[in-house]
Each structure stands twice: as C-alpha cells, then as structure tokens.
Image 1: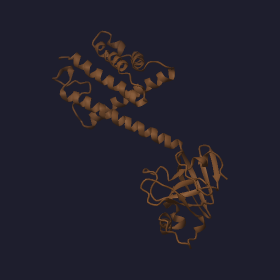
Image 2: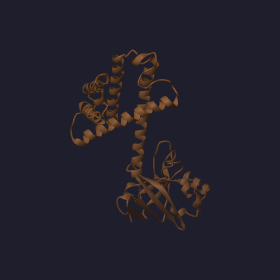
Image 3: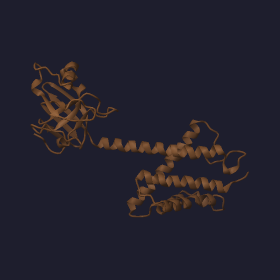
Length: 296
C-alpha cells in the first residue's frame, strides 16, 4: 500500500487551520493569523508521529489533551485561566461537532468515501472524491454548526427576558407570554403611562374580531361599550400607515418576571394586528419600566 504522507499532512494542516479560525469566529476572538498558522502547523505534526514507534504515546487521551492545550496556547495565548479554558472548550466543541457532522454526512449519503482519506487502490493519500468530501463538507458543517450556536444564543437571551403576563379587564382575565424589551420606550404622552404591545387577537374573546379590527383601523364607533378604555398613542413604525397606535386600558396587569411579581394599574395595551414572534414564543412586548419598579 502506498502512503502519501505529504498529502495527509497537508490535508490535516488545512483542517487544523480551519478549526482554529472557526474557534476564533465562534468565540469572537481577535485573529492573529501568524499565531494561528503556527498553531495549525504544530497540530499537524502529529501526523508524522503516527508513523513512528511513539504512536502509542500520542494515542493516549492525556497526551492528546495536553497537546491540544499547546495548540490553543499557541493560537490564542494566555491572558487568564478562564480565557484559556473558554478557548480550549471552544476548540474541543468545534472539533467534535464538525467531526461528528462529517461522519453524519458520510453515513447519510451512504458514500464509500473514507473520512481518513483512504480508498482501496488509492493509497493513504486519498482520492479526489475523498478530498472533495472533506474540503467541501467541512466548511458546510462548520457553517451549519455556527448558525445553530447563534440561534441557541438568541433563544437563551430571549428565554432570560421572558415573563408571564396576567391581564385583567372587568371579569375577563387571561395570561400570555411576554418579552421584556429595553428598546420599547413607548408611553402615553398625556398620562406618561407605559405602553405594553400585545397581539390584538388576545382581546377577541372580550371584544370580538370585528370590534377589535375596528379599533386597529381607528374606526371605533362612539357607542362602543369600551370606548372609555380606548386611547390613541402617537406611534411610528416601518410599514405602518396610521400615525397612531390604538391602546386599551386594562384594570390591572400582573407580570411574573424571574422570581418577582409586578402589579400595576397604570399601563396601556397597545394593539398590534400581526404576530410579534414568528415562532410564537411570546405575544406581548413588555415596557422595561414595568419590571423595574412597581408602577402604581
């Protein structure tokens, strides 16, 4: 069997460099390409040790871990222990995810490509198919992994800002999920009461769809049974035709945020005709003032 050691080393050098660059992108680290190139070169040297009598030493998990520590140290340096530990964890995470992703692609497509770049009759240098599979599949798996990590981060932030909202209007009471949005600074210009945006359909059981739609279109009749609760708040948003937002005055709003409970009567419900979250995670946008202190 012919072994193309130079090709194996070159392939590993490229993958190691991509893993280090990927770690920097994942953790948003400053990229020093000289250090990263040196780290990738150091990482790729393990290929040569695999063909020496010392191969058993480098197959030891402890030695692999120490070797990885040196790779991360060369690539990112050492500022403090937590910084180094984050870099090491990010490097391991990306390595396992991309490696597992390549194996998953391999079995999903039922290819005969060996991920170790070995095909019978082609030696250990690999064929064009095996190289293409790794070089094309690796960036695809990395891109997919990064997109999923970013999505999880966003969901985690949203989850930490979620609250349960209980709204009371006469005998009508309902609960919904709300997102505390620091960017929402909307207030009633007359009373300075905070405005909490809610999806209009939440009031259908109380008002009915037609009356709710009339309120959204600023076409409310004077004999409307809840006319005394309706307010118009100056509001401008992209794609909105009217310069005002229809708001509704509840009797009381209770917000369960974290381990605290906030009760207020001084609040308006701004009606929004569409879904606030495309995935249905929340139906209200909570004014931050409502969870900072009791608004009486």
